[in-house]
Image (cartoon, rainbow, N blue to C red; front, side, top):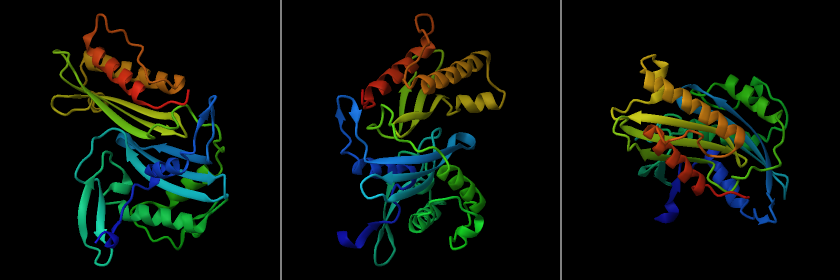
Length: 280
């Protein structure tokens, strides 16, 4: 039975970094000299409501092959029933199992998963090595993802700088999320931190406070319904995010001696920092 079952949707796209890292786990730290089996070019677009779309081209050093990866993923919202890995019977195509995805991604989306498969299959077959035009995607049969956008994203990726020096988080999961329930009686809810790594560097981090009613702090601020306290929290979070990306250190500079609101956030960031595997 096992040989009749295949994963119709694997965590391709940016989740395929797992595959790349698996093949690159000859990555070894010898006197802080990290040996990586591939280089890459990558571009990520910040879309609305926590979504990021990315294109990555990984260049294997050993045989000069290239892997092309497109996906979209969300750093804001938690998992839902619409995002799962689907396992089907190879012969009948019948779906026999759904494995919930920890993250909302296009490649695990019920709506977009088939197109993401087709896009990645197409680009890996064509092996484009220079700028393309819309006519180059004539054979690609998709309807939900804009071909114009794919052309633009790919061209920006292929023309981007080659990344050869990995960041200190190269051996950590490239995408992760942690939460911490607030212990402050005046601010009930939970803190959530999600991050995206690009070639071992912190490319993006998203810090949210989700209140007891499920409202996200960023939504409350965007809707201009934030209280004075919530507005201050939002501004502080924005500064922390900028500081983390600039310093490449998961930490908070907010003092908590007189402000219990941030004690749980600081604890969460500290725990996440310890959890990340570094190459230092």
